[in-house]
Image (cartoon, rainbow, N blue to C red; front, side, top):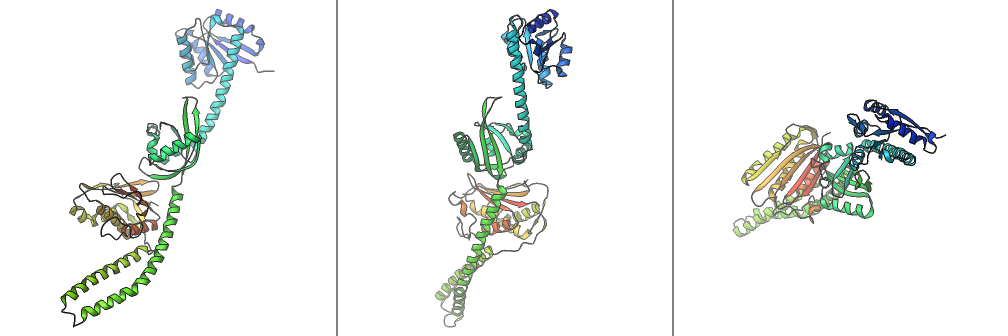
Amino acid sequence: MDKVVKVLLIDDDEDDYIITKDIFSRISNAGKYELSWIDTFEKGINAVLKHQYDIYLVDYRLGKHTGVDLVNEAVLSGVKQPIIILTGKGDYKIDEQAMNVGAADYLVKDKIEPDTLDRTLRYALKQAETLKALKESENKFKIIFDKAKEPILISDYTGKIHDINKAGLDFFGYHIKEILVTNDRSLFYTQEDRENFIQELETKGAVSDFECQMVSSKGQVYFCSLSSFLQIDLQNMVEVYHTIIHDLTHRKHLETKSIHESKFSISEHIAKGFAEEIRNPLSTINLVLHELTTDESLVYNETLQTSLEVIKSNFDSINQLTKNFISSTENKPIITQEVGIKEVIEEALSEINDLILGHRIVLEQHILPTEIYLSIDRKQIKKALVNILNNALESMESYPKVLNISTINDSGFYSILIEDNGKGISSALEHQIFEPFFTTKKDAEGLGLTDAERSILAHRGNIIFKPQDKGSLFVIQLPIS
């Protein structure tokens, strides 16, 4: 036997109740409905809030209140049972008002027929069941969405962000109110990545393992893989993208570290072979130079002595360059201790202070005020910073010359950002920036950045080069723990 549907009529006119009861009696299979009656707004809302019935018929006029007031209060209180508004005359504005606050339907009293009422009740109950199932499904999705450990972003073609889970807020470093007024374009490190992502998604309807770089509110850059699919948001009738963000930064760093370690191993092997090959010729040249400069018969030959001094000077330069190259490829043991990194930065800046003053460079500092202690080799990190700072100073050729150094504490790393407004470097040469002997500067060895990279990687840190519209930015990341 089908379940009896409990219907409550909320109407302050007993005659209307009698008429409604008669209409119910003429419905085919009338036994499937059980009609009850309440004559005041207060009793009606109390019954609704206690969920005592399956469906409600509510008169628009209820003393000083209206049926719309009752629907509105019920919906705000989380009532899921359908409520149908009844009125004595057809009024589109009442219809629209009722639907806007959440009424299931709207009926004009003098036009109600048994079949019409039966159909309206059945449709309202069916719609309520569908909405309930949909809500339960949404709640399950919401739980998965909120509890997921990976960031999940819901946005659209324009870049409007509709929602983001807690993992996403933590990942990007935003408060929910901030990110909902942020365009998703600002989350991509380059607009080219965003455009390619959208194009592929719009073309295929779904994207898997789209690799790109994304950036947090604090400027932290992450290597990510995006998996996304299109869906229609039925509530707002807009096409949205559901995007899961996989953080590949750690994996990328391990891959980069492996590449660098291989590169260093090869460089060290080449350097040792180079040293063996050049040591004997250099020793011979040095010996001959000594004999010529001490030969009594040649000592007063000024032209010859001047030429020998030039040869000796170039010999010393080659010898020193060879030593520097070998030194830059050697694995130097690091002796770590707990050191205040702010103090190390100040020491590095102090060492290049004369150059800053001599070249009239504007130094802008945004250093975190709180001292943070890192387990590092003080001497090596200081030298790495000096090398990078010198590189920045040497790249600035025209005034005003501005050097900016700032620090951030993010994602387990203490990051030092060194930015200049120099001539920069072309994208075609960007991948060579840390190669031994690579330089775009006159009279430079091209070993400073190589040595700095080696020291920072030995500390399990990272060094990232980011070309700017004007100048360059180096980001040094040192692990806090």
